[in-house]
Length: 383
View 1 (cartoon, rainbow, N blue to C red):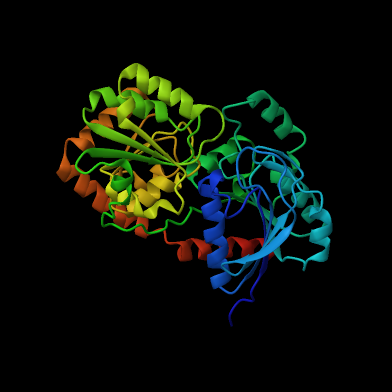
View 2 (cartoon, one colour):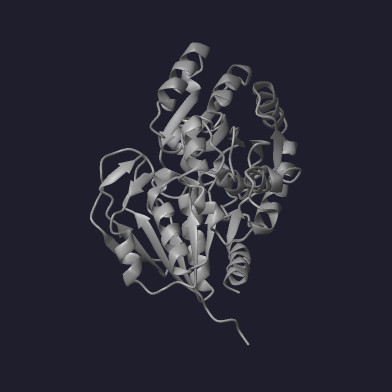
C-alpha cells in the first residue's frame, strides 16, 4: 500500500522570485516542486524580501508556485537577508498543521521563530543551514556568540539536520551535532542545454575568443579576484561574471584590480541574468568556481550538465561529485586556480573529455531522485 501523503511546511528567509539571494532560492523551489509532484502538500512561509539591500518590504500576499502554497509575510524590519515578519505566529496558528517542517537558513528571525513554535506544538522539523552554519566572512565573533546562545536551540531542537555535502556535514559534526541526527542529501542538478545558444557570446560581443564563465553572487569569498589575477597569464581570454551584486563593494574592488593589472577590457560583468542562466553555460570554454567556501555550488553542477569543464576549489561541496568526473579540483590558491584554467584552455581534447564526464555525472543527480531521498528523510522524522 502506498505511503500516505505528507503536509510539509517550508520556512525560508527568501523564496522565489528572490533570485538575488543566489542558488538556494532555486534549490528550494525545485525541491518544493518535486515534492508536490510526488503527491505532497507543500506550504512555504517566507518574507517579502527580493533584494539583498533595501528598505522594509511589502504587504503579505499568497501565491501558488509549482503547486506549492507560498505565503509571503510582510517584512517591516530587515537587515540584508534577515527579515522580521510579525504576523508569522498568527498565520501559522491559522494554517493546517503540518506533518513535518523544514527550516532553511540560519541566524534569521523567521526560521528561529518558526522553529520555536514547531517545538512548542510538537511538529518535528528538519534544519538545513544552506551553508550558513559555520561563521564566515564578516562579524564572525558576533555570529559565534549568537550561535552559542540565541540560535543554539534551532539545530539542537531539530529532528534531523540536513547537509547538502560532506563539507557541510563536517561543519555540523565539528559543532557537536550528533552524527546520527545528520542526513546527507545533495542538491539536484537542472540539466542545461549542451549546444551553444550564442546568447552569452552575443551579450559580450565575443565570437571566437576563449571564455571563462562565473555565475553567482558577485561577493567577497567567491574567489573572483583569483580569476582576475589569472588573466595577465591567459592572453586574449575573456572573463564573464554573471550574477547580482552582494552589496559589499566587490564589483568596485574587482574593477580597480583589473585596471591595475591592465585587463579591464577583458573582465565583463553582466549583472543578474533576467532568467535562469542555463542557456549560457555551453557558450563558455571553462566554468570557474574558485570560492573560499560553498556548501554545494549549484552553478558549477549546472555548467557540468552542459558539458562544460569546471575548475572548482576543494572548499566547495560540489567538488565531491565532480572530482575526476567533470572538474579539475584545486586548492583555494592563486597558482592552483591559474594553472588549472591555463591547462584546460590550452587543451581542447581535455576540455571535451572532462566536459563529457561532467554531463554524465550531473545527470545522476536529478531533482526527482533527490526529492525521493528528501521524502525518505521526512518519513523517518514523522515515524
